[in-house]
Image (cartoon, rainbow over all chains, first blue to last red; front, side):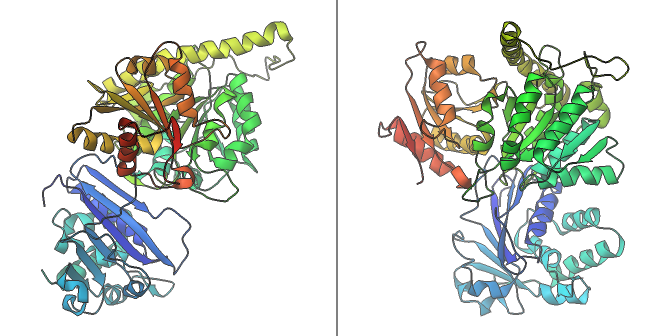
Length: 191
Length: 379
């Protein structure tokens, strides 16, 4: 993918899983990797813990003037597989689009893997393994970010890890960095 | 650094080194206040932070502090701004250089927290200078520049920096932040020409009769005229020092040889750049004039643009019973001096998303002669 092309990403998750933080961390890493224009924003509204939420990210080599929502994403990232029964996460996904799902399944287990590029990673188990929990609930946002460089060459794993180290300190940073490493290695793709 | 419009505003406010910040939280302004509180806790903000019980009190506290001769900052939104209304007039008539961010949000009922410019547009006649920003970088740069403008003795007026709810306030974008030393060089410590002093008491804001009051208003109007000259000067000084320029009173984008010029403010104006690129690619001669200052109003620049182009105005506000307010003022600026056609659209109210495709549709409808003089889009 050309370094100037605009990449638009939609995150789907549940309130409290950290979709907005994931979008923010991802674009901060993309900026470090030399993408001059980046943007991250939540779905504009009042969000509640547990309810389906969305967050958005744009990555470009040039300054971004767009201020509207993303309707036709290049990549969809699903933090919670159960949401796919409630929300049409594939809505507007471009031809040749990529779907990255937090799931124990393999990409071929999803019907739409015939039509779209699919990647899966068991981010929940990775979060539990590294003790990334808030109130006993696994937080999958940082683990799943480790899978992004496997499907998008515009962001590197090292930048994602550097951004995590800038945001958190000590043990908290370490376990999140290890989780991204695991996710990077364990991601399965059908393309 | 990369951060949301509100956290960038907090950063700029703290780097301007106000002596007093007084604010009351309201969605979607809350993270500005939270950001400043964080800087206070870390010791990076050393001024006085006054937690007040309402926005009316926030503005009153800023008025008191500013009259004592110190730099002040506050931020609000929507109903918070409306609750300040009386004190907004007060601050401007008292000629106090207060700087405030207003995050443009809907007025209720029906209750809604999304982007809409009717809050600040309805404060149009308070005497405040009004900027409308389109990016997080512009928010940062405009806050610092605004202190320099407000505190200039030819101006001495309060400044309101407006930006759209969520679309800017909660969206992360990259921003270049200069060193504190460079900011201090650009914006030296505020030296008031007069101030309240308990050791040298004077009366200010006393009763004045009709023979003088009209002069107070005339002086404010003259100060706005002076601001018209100073805003471009300050913007160019900023460009020289920091290499960034967001325009004078308005920002022209691809206006050379344009047969149509689109006028808009805030987030819609940023999105309009994408629409203009698309339409020019398809051969339509259209440019953009992004309004940065609504007060003072860039009448002369708009008149100049109308010499060779018809105008299309998009408003994210309405003066109910009349029209979109920018549309209204653009037409008034041209009266008897230009025969350019002006078409107006009202859209995006209540946070309705306005995409570059929507903007292109409005422009095409106008160019094809199918648009009414003023119409709604996206109802």
